[in-house]
Length: 190
Image 1: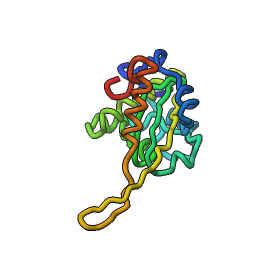
Image 2: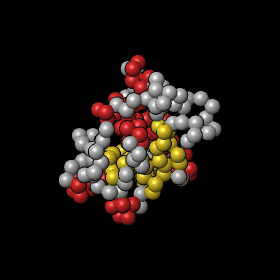
Image 3: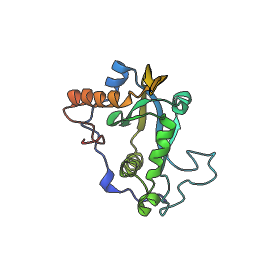
Image 4: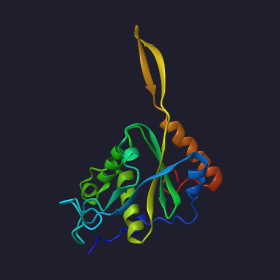
């Protein structure tokens, strides 16, 4: 009934750090969870859901727990967790909804055409394998504060919002590494 799991992307999260460390210490909030992209899980979809073993579209989609945070634009740091263990730390400057839209381009049909980013494909396959194995897949999110500065730009004074998420993301990976001894399994150089 479902497409075969690509065993190359099965992630063992058992040795990763529990998300409670980041929720308690830094205030991350559960924003959404991954679920099989079926009519049962997403009844308002009229098409684009799993329709059998040969389906090559989006295999998992996202159920929101915090609609406002999910839809807001801005910079965020997020933790992807399998069974409450952090497997990836990521960041976005355009908001979570747009980031998840980008991840959805990791569908098999786009990979087969060679038109999706490797990271998106790997992560979508890992989430699909996890959900198919009965694991809970959740995204915890932290809103990065905005900083504005005034700068003279070629003779005109401008108010500029500076991008901060990469600093927060790299620091959180350092914190994770200090606690866990390694980077998260699905984070760069993990």
